[in-house]
Amino acid sequence: MIVVCPACQARFQYDDNRFGATRAKRFKCPKCSHVFEVLNPGLSPITPLEPEELLLAPSLPQEDPGPAPFPSARTTAKRDREAMLVAAGLQVPGMPPGLKFTLAFLTGPQASTVQVLEGPCTIIGREEGDVVTRDPETSRRHALLEIHRDGTVWISDQQSTNGTLVNGERIAGAVQLLSQQEFTCGNSTFMLIIRNTDEFQLH
Image (cartoon, rainbow, N blue to C red; front, side, top):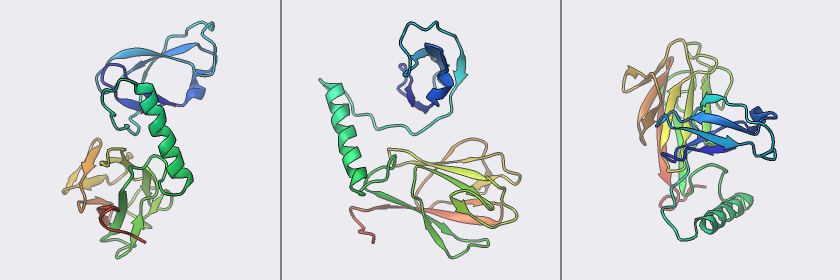
């Protein structure tokens, strides 16, 4: 399920199975530190509350539709349209429409190859994940690429041995990547390429 902070509107992913039999849980927003409660979507409100303060991991933020006289109707219509595009094969679930994201291998064992990013979350790893480097200097699960609904791309290191470098510096948290920007995992260097499919028709 998606949890929305009522203070700053930040959105986070949370496994609703962790509610268990509790009526609601208390969350702390890592962005603004606001504490709020979320009802268990699978239970009636008569179950006693078991307080639990959790620090959530960021997920994919949704576009802010802005103020509207009938926000529920607008949200429902937008969701129905996205579901229709996904069902028609015109849009990947969770991916921003109209954009195509590609990784080009510049150095390393996979140099001179290109891989299209198919989903909003991409794991880069030595022998497992969505992008496999086959690079002995890359950790098993080295880095995570997250494509947000606003079209921005963020990279974070997954506690790798040799670290993830952006602009030649080892990163400690999530860092935004721009189109044609390079980053390095082990001995493998990549370039992120973002294309507008409305301007460049890709086949």
